[in-house]
Amino acid sequence: MLIQCLAPRNCSKPTPSGLLKALSPVFKIQDVRPVRNLNDHTEVSVGIILYGILGVDEKAQVLNTYIWLDMAWKNEFISWDQEQCGTDDISLPRSQFWVPDLVINEFMNENTAPCVPYVHVQSDGMIHDYMPLRVLSSCNLNIYTFPFDVQNCTFTFNSYTHKVRDIRLKLARPASAILKNTLDEMSTVGEWQLINITAYKGNSSFDELIFQIKIKRSSALYVVNLIIPSCFLITVDLFSFLLPPQSVDRSAFKMTLILGYTVFLLLMNELLPVTGHTIPLINVFFALCLALMVASLLETILITHLYSSSSRFAPVPRWVRIVVLQKLGCCVGLPSNPPKDNSTEAYPDAVSEEVKSGRNAPAALQLAELRELGRDLRAIRLQVEQQLSGDQNTEEWIQVASIIDRFLFWFYALFLLVSCVTMICFWVRSYRL
Image 1 (tube, helix red, strand yellow):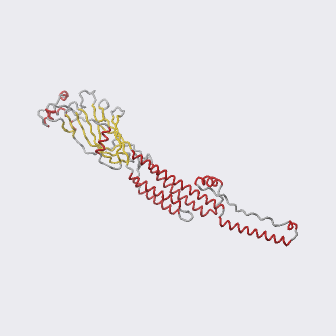
Image 2 (image 1 turned 90 degrees about the horizontal axis):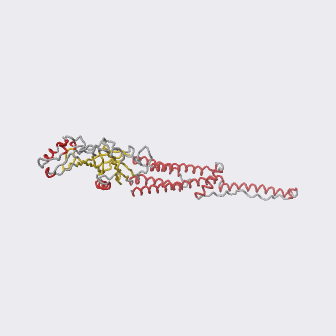
Image 3 (image 1 turned 180 degrees about the horizontal axis):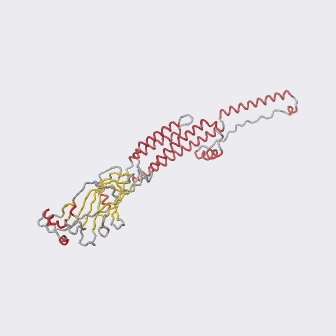
């Protein structure tokens, strides 16, 4: 029977039934790899068209795509004269022929695409098999730069049972042609955009053909719904430092902002990716923003307490005076004020030699009364100066509060500037890909 199959097919008449009758001996050996010598290998050409990117599951690390797969190989048992048989190709059931057992190693689920039961058979023995595949494949997703992330996923084709000595794979078309055909045929325009498709051979005992799919996320939705509102709230909290803490309830305003920002994060939580092995940079940004809001509220409470109760505090410690008043104050543009000299010059001793010697007693008594009156006036003047200018200890504590307030304001502004520049750089970089 094998010798009979090796002979060219002769059709009794140029009709489909005549050709089908001529090919009937081949149908009986569909379980055998179609080569004249079993030491020869079967060369299978593989091509794909990525028809759609249906979704990406970051938590499960899965890529969901819809592809068109085409395979071609030569059946050495088939050949016929197209003039004698009336056609140069015919579509026949796949079950009647040997088909290479190619699999995608990253496949995670059953193929749910419609089944195409036919293959195209040509007169020279070439068989073309076209089939749709819904591929749910594993992919190592790195979402650190979400929503500006770029992912690289692979489709690894190889025979499940035949090693490289039996089946060898090759590209049906160059990778550039596959990319062009994919971009022309792709029908889905969703969250993910296709950037590039490359192909290369693997190194294994089974001949492998690896397609690398490079996709990027469309970040405009996340920028508008997540980043810009967050930056607005942070900017409002930043400018709240301009409110005077001694005359305005700044803490109530900041608490309202924190409440609003928390509700905002809860509402937008569904847009954030969920994964176990890495934390996206945008999550760190949101956490730092919330931490800065809480820190600014605590700082406002401290500042208000210093303004209202500093008169009861102990003198400013020496290390606070050095670190905050002198060094940090110069950094933020609020150098410490020199302490005021509230001491009063002592009046010269009005007692003359005569008073000391006991002579001229009436004049001495008058001078003594004047001295006592001078002391009383001095005490009154010191008390009035203390009430008008404030205690030096209170002034130092108020100055400490002002320096801390100014420092946190500039730190807040620097963080906001660096965050905005970083996000813009990531956004511009993602659009350049």
